[in-house]
Length: 108
Image: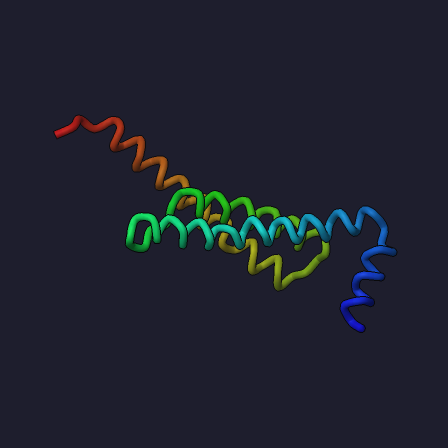
């Protein structure tokens, strides 16, 4: 009965609340797809790799989920989603920095 009650409450909710619930689910979906990306790429090359798309999904999903956590004032979720965001951004920065350094260095 809990599931049906949840469906009923969602149907009766204000559209604004339903929109924010959708944003929360979308953030978690983007965040979760990063593992699928990492797994498929690792299978493709035959060893464990972390593709750049993993970090983009981490950053985007983390930011969306963080925004949702701020909206619902869920402090544990807010801390859990907010703390790693600088790490995702830093990893993307380092990837682009290294690509730029390789592009600028002469080939041997």
